[in-house]
Amino acid sequence: MIGKIAVIGGGNIGGVCVSEIASRRLARKAALVDIKEPDFAKGKCLDIAEGNAVIGSDVIMEGSKSYEVIEGADFVINTAGVPRAVRPDGTFPSREELLATNLKITDAVAAGIKQYAPDAFVISVANPLDAIVYRLYLQLKEQIPKTKIMGMAGVLDSARYKYFVAEAAGVSVENVEAVVLGGHGDTMVPIRSACRIYGLPVTKFVSESDLAAIETRTRKAGGEVVGLLGSGSAFVSPAWSALDMLESIAYDKKKITPVCALLDGEYGVDNLFVGVPVVLGKAGIEKIIEIDLTDDEKAALQNSVDAVSKTCAEVDKTAI
Image 1 (tube, rainbow, N blue to C red):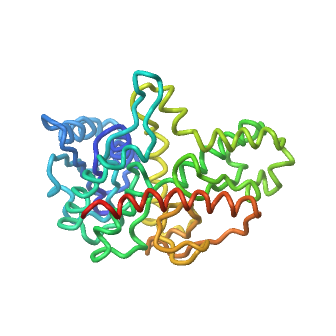
Image 2 (cartoon, rainbow, N blue to C red):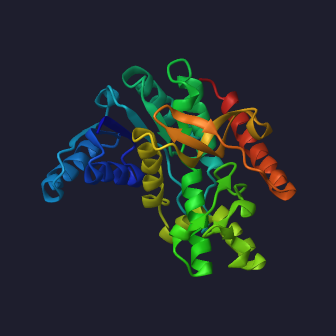
């Protein structure tokens, strides 16, 4: 069992993470930090703790407005940030539009991790995903190696792609293999050439036109949920996706998983966090897997990398 898992941000994603840690009995202790008044994190943890007897869980729940509560955590899941919400005109801000506000929040998160959990694995969920995890890395790289700092994006994006394909093909999601590369936004790249159903090419089950529609829907899936909810964004599937990454590391699964990782020449990319498949094990990101791509997929990935680079350039302009 893991000693302690800390979750930063007690909103919908953070709340699901903490409740799942308790129900799955993933750690001896779970810590939650949220600055919301009057004592939001403590209240959320008390609610879960009072239900532990119902589900037979002895996970100790600790909530606080300050970062001391994360001291000694083995894992930190960062969900802290302002979510996307529908504007009065029916539109909603892009992940990039949230950058300025969420960078300030991220700096506070990094300071807390640096002081109280400098040996932790860091899994970041906050948006804009690629830029926020890049900022965390810049803040923490002296204490935490790049193999232990990663963003949750590819697990969720690939899961959405799998779900839409399974629905169109009329098969179980368990039969579908799929991966999405690139930035966590509208430029993400569902890799059709790597999509399989029961080991067979996806095109044997789903038409080219339907696949094109599915890939477009995958790229815009987060916005679709935001539009339907009207307030906030997806929260259950992101939380489950972050915990999937955590379990792969904690149990040393060596599971090939798409995550937002710092690249050092892979896919022709340097010093950017981009969604790629990696081997997740007890050391964190143990290997980056390079997929053979079609020419169209290579071009689409480069377009996505360019978008990530542009956003991260804005991060570099903001003083740390």
